[in-house]
Length: 265
Length: 312
Image (tube, rainbow over all chains, first blue to last red; front, side, top):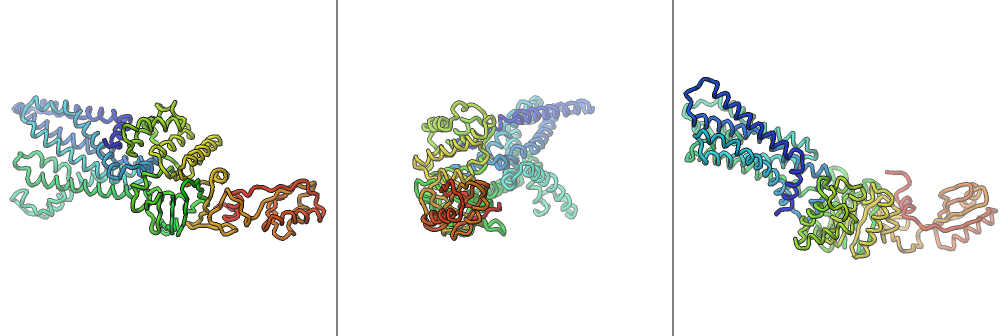
């Protein structure tokens, strides 16, 4: 096992946020379920079937979970390398026989493992939707996979910022700006671009250059995962390609920064 | 063991290293001395593969630091001026992590860690968190980590900074012991007395270049008598040091460095016989000399000679 992964996991689980954040996450998920259930039982829609409520609850939870994890992902990864610079431990790592790739991989996996931990501890809460029906294992699996890809990309981006800045506070701030750019600004750009496009023939008649910003939008990526299995192509695959490409680019840039470690340490 | 040739490194507009050369033989304990901003840390960072030189070459144990950094790292131990430690790890965990990071086989790892704990005197604190250790203990822990993979060469950048006197003595002893075990050590320090005591040779650096002393040497031999260098003499007088200094100053080749009521400090150049001529000169001029002692030429004295008295 990569020694970096073992070290990172040990250190993360010793931090106070190692148990505070999962607790807050579970509380937030429970609050959302309670709110949706309460709203649905008091809005007078007595005709709603159980499976319809199950789908509604699943969709709400899928987006809420993604939003919560988008808020948490930079906390785990944006400080991962800056903390090494702040503690002056980076030169020790770079002069060991660990290569930049092992250091990056250790930091990346440890960040992602924590996100996976949150996803896993949220399963009992999410399983409430199965009680109402309307949602199968495929929907849960594709949403979970898409969420992991999105958060892996956000972690890779945050790690890049962590390698580029000296202070955790700066890397974290810029990581959050990036999350906002991807989730909100891409949507605004799409809205503005759409205002000049006149089409009545549905999504595929919109020019690619207008649609392009949305392929980097995490909420849009999740939406493309919610279509029937045979309609995942091309939109979900395009989003998957875009997110993986961004993550790979960030990984390469982070490795380049780590190779110049002495200048930035 | 360490070869640096015409090395250059720029940071923006300023030259940190400007054609510096160095050669350290196998088994030497070698000092690097110069004022702040001289380029010592940059040189040590290049040698430890942390940064790349713009031009020139640097080799450790025959491996070029730019071409084969992994081979260099496998024979090198590096201790920066402010060693970083994981405060939230236990002492044993810290050593185990680096033993793993230096690819020490798992069957040997436990023994290597135990040896590191024993040699650093931290065996009793193995389960303590690093943050609970004193500064001196942390320094010993970092040195133990640096030695885990049995390096052939040690690069130490200001290792005594911030240590109390006893910890400094302890560090000096440890370095001497490591050197006796055959490890080549390149040590940068501002504490000249330490360098004087443990190093065999010292290189002078300023402005990223080799500097030369009065005799034209860019490397000072600390264990050999150098007749070309001026000698220091302390002259005890019965009364009126000022009067004695006046006559001392009129002797060719003598330079009065310090004057007190009952003592003057004089530097005399040239052959050893000049000293007896100087003494005769004083006595003949009526100075009542009660003591005439030769002081060892200190590194500090030579440092002042090269770099001047004013801090940079």
